[in-house]
Every structure is written in structure tokens, then in C-alpha cells.
Image (cartoon, rainbow, N blue to C red):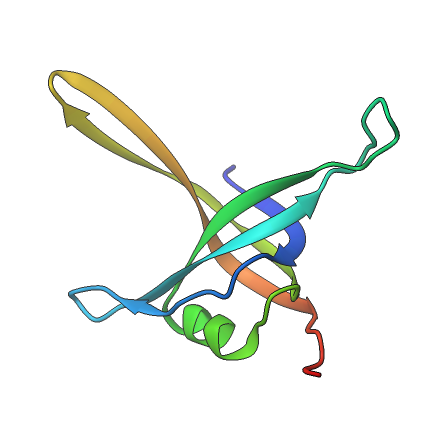
Length: 107
């Protein structure tokens, strides 16, 4: 099973990009509050960069602003490459479903 689910606030406006083959993509940085306080009683946050593809990427870029709250379900993907006889593993979070929990109103 390969699933993640996070709820968090957008920290920077996503930019729509297009691959050489014509696929639309973007990435969004989410600030996700931890479920428990630290030893000082403060709820810290983690920051996750999430890849979004195709129509979902277009919708996200057209709709969202900073501080929009998203619920994201997706999968982890590994990208393996070799350099100078060493193998490197990079991991990305790829969105499969996004729910818009709260979109702040423009002032």
C-alpha cells in the first residue's frame, strides 16, 4: 500500500508549467501542523512539496491563493538515478486527489 494524506495551508502560489510532451504540472508547498505539541506546548509544522499533474494542476493554479487549506491524498514516488558509480534515491509526494477545505476570500 502506498498512500499519504495531509491537510495543510498553501505557503506560496503554485505556478503552472508544461512538460516538453505537453503535460501540465505544478508543485505546491503545504504547511501541515503536527498533531501533538512539543515540550513547550507549541504545535510545530512540517512543510511538504507536493507534485500535481494534468487538469488537477490547472484547477489548483486557477483557484488557490496563499493560505488556501487543502486536503491531499496521494502516493509517494521514487526517482532513482546514478552518478559516478553511486545510486541516489529521491522521493516525491504526488497528489491523486485534492479537496479544497477553505479558500480565503479576496479583500
